Length: 448
Figure (tube, rainbow, N blue to C red):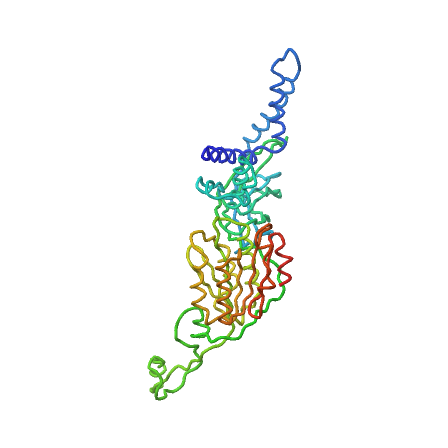
């Protein structure tokens, strides 16, 4: 039964996409009227409805025939920015080259994305959030629509093209609004010309594949200053994100008895004819961890998307120019990325967050070794949790036991057990707790 429903939805989607491209809204109305008049006009001796049928059929045939004479040739170049952001309108340039010897009027341009239809496995195993509240058919229908929108990432509408001079290039601006983080996969560009009645479209399509990464949504945040003292970073800035015993290079000086051989600068010795060593220094600076909870039993979840958006917003807000920020999460495996003090840029962190997936096959305890590896280096910590339980409380207690100042943000849905969670009783000198409710994230983040 599931496979039959899937095939029905798959075929219906392809048919509807073809209809939208070829048949206008006016054309659809004419077609429906044509079917109704054909049904009512079967008996030509009893009424004159068949005359309406004949009239409508002639108009529709004329429109279709007219579309067959659209001999248009073009090429195009799509000029995309490096990134887009969820919820922010994206405008980019398209250069359309009219390769015909005639000026082209009354044309439209439509962007098409790669086929967003899910596989049967994805359709069977990926429920829509809160679909348990729907009846049997609606459950599958809205699941299909939701998966289509998730894989497509953004939607596009046809725009009017200015007159295209013969054998020349014309710049146009296209606009889309990304709905989800991830990758927009552009497929082709279609130039559309409606017939004189505006019922049927003639189409010429050029395949133009490209992709664009969509970064997570960003919230406005108040200035956030995490407490915490400078910590000794073995290896200094250059090795702050790895394990090692090297130190930050400062200068060269003459050899002194007792200096280790590994610090000798051999090139300088060769130049001056006497032993020269590298003088290095340890470094102390502020380092924070940003722990993102990704542990869910479903592939997609609104609560995870909000968690990623909050992490992205904090990464943008926390000043990392004079400090380090470690992003820690578990996807297919445990990850830790370090940013700040010229090690990497915030844009790189947002790019990583755009690709985060839910961890369905591991428990929350699998992130603890990643935290323990860096615990001696940390000045403070931000935890973004998707729920609150004993495992997460254990991690917070461990951070507090190590003297790490911690900001804990717990995202909750309406009507959950977290409604009775008393965050004030959990807050103390080393840990601050905040509950963030779905649908009110922006307002509650401003209270932090």
